[in-house]
Amino acid sequence: MSYVLEPEVAGGLGERTVWDRTGPVPRVTALHYEVDQWLGDDLLESHPCFLATEALARAVDEAGLTGVAWGAAEVTTSDVAADLAPHQRLPPLRWLQPVGEAGRDDVALDGTGRLLCSDAAMDVLRGFHLENCLVEPQDAAL
Image (cartoon, rainbow, N blue to C red; front, side):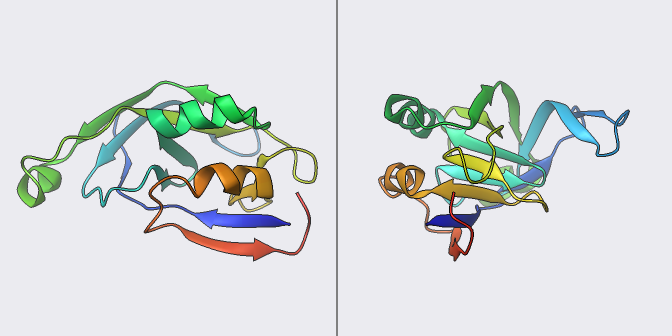
């Protein structure tokens, strides 16, 4: 079985995000994620990008999950975050780049850019905080 995930949206793409608009679908080449309010999940999203805590990234790598590449992200907090949670410290975050193929790899994107995960990937994710992540079974096996 495979699953569609809609992770916590803790903020948005910051002004220093770099886009490549030369192809038919624009893509992010350098990610700046600006946090407004982090509720504590280990997996975050701001379409079309995903971030994972360093701890989750390590667990994904140790499990040997396929279809994942990691990139560096500039992560900052907004004035809103400073007002809402002035003493909150963010954990180190890594840019999770789904590069897998649906039906073959553990992590992939569907045709609309939603995150797909296999049973093996869900086994890893269930060991982490995902209180604000919507998880739904998907018909097509991954």
